[in-house]
Image 1 (cartoon, rainbow, N blue to C red):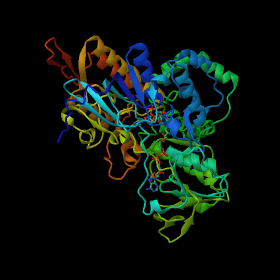
Image 2 (image 1 turned 90 degrees about the vertical axis):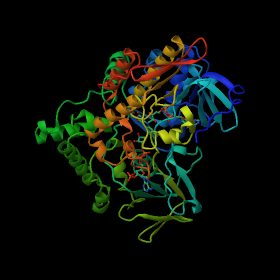
Image 3 (image 1 turned 180 degrees about the vertical axis):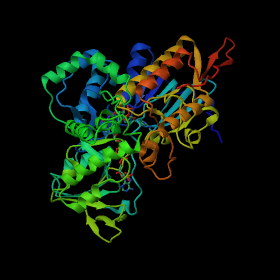
Length: 560
Ligand code: FAD
Ligand code: NA7
């Protein structure tokens, strides 16, 4: 049954023009544009105690962005690009958090953000064309525009393992890491060997007493190649920032390098080895997959060549052949390409053990550790879940979001989340998403900027044209999902089980969650849709007799 808001609901609440949920990269830039450029009255909410989003929450040892520093930042503050000191090739969590805090202070953003407040519900009132927002402290707010910058790797996944509640030691998820965690000398277990698990394992191994890694799937990893950078390196970046951003925003993965145009099998075996070795020496997961050759993510033969190279490296690095065997992946190299700071070599340490939980599953968590199917009790003081996220739509499903006729977002997305161009979804008027479903799979700050700027333009347009609401046609949304599916099916990514396709959460629809066509192509689509008077969207205006007048733009075939 749709829930309609009571007559008294609208009128008693605190009113804003726009409410933004989330104070990470997305929410902060949205606040900046809506408040300072469009002069709207904006309020941002975040359940965190401070700004930062991902980088507020993920304080685990070893947390590092694998996007190079020069492109893991905002491009819109040109003075800051020149002023901010780049000292290392990549950025650790504290470095990124410091940067985000600086941006918030520099642009006086904090004054419009309410921290430690969870948005619990958002309902669209069709009479007033406004969103009524409820928070965990029982307060109500309303706004014409609702912007969800909830994060796509933010809702934690804690698998429901038997006995989890009886563990008497310390239990942490990497994305909810306590500031006072102390692992020194302790017996530590880590479940999960994705990007996060491998970072945390590598970082804590030298300080813990013993470390047991519970691995379900082995990973293809290449070195990250972090380290200090020279003055020449930094000067060169700062001098060329305009062309760097131009290249990044027109590229596929937006990581700040030219993607290769050379097919893997078009060169000799010796040349291939040389190219892979150079990439290995230079470091970077995305560079290894996309800068070496053009077809590793789409052609199986090319993919196998890359797999073979990494497998050979594992056998060279890991001394114990049985551990090396367990660490060696045999499946496609088609998850998010990872990089590390010595992960494989960590298993040469005396205090580190590997348990293959695919061959020998976790039976239960006991009072004092983990019992595996073979009957062994792994005694632990600390158990770390590096088990990732309910990616993309996880935070949406945790809020009671209701659109037209009271339809719940969970209902609209029951076969998997969808959107029109990642930023909007049918039946949820005036709700704009930053990094919503089916957006580009890239280095994210440039994609966040693209979406924030586009949403900002839509809102400016609505204000100028005095539109009361705007939302996509369902046909446009269906077409966009089809486009995303079609592109994904041409890649090997769709053949590997990972969070990119919802495969990491039991029961989650295994469908398409990203646009794998690249940021450049995505920006072109956005540009064309805007030029075409927001093709695919429908609008409502308020006429003089205060009756709604619906203008439905003829949806034209999306040719992207
Ligand atoms: P987030 O930073 O996730 O912020 C969302 C905010 O919304 C959070 O603070 C959350 O508390 C808040 N929120 C959610 N629901 C509610 C609610 N109901 N009420 C109130 N507040 C709410 N991306 C890259 O491009 N390169 C990388 O190298 C990279 N490394 C990563 C490493 C890790 C460990 C993780 C977890 C992610 C990484 N990412 C990386 C992805 C990263 O999430 C994005 O780059 C970027 O930080 C996302 O910013 P955002 O503002 O969209 O969302
Ligand atoms: P990921 O990449 O989803 O990795 C999660 C890991 O946890 C992965 O190794 C999983 O194994 C493992 N996992 C999940 N559930 C279980 C259970 N029940 N038992 C054992 N192991 C489990 O998350 P990350 O946080 O590492 O990275 C996500 C992104 O955030 C990353 O790409 C960066 O962009 C930042 P599986 O592989 O599913 O077999």
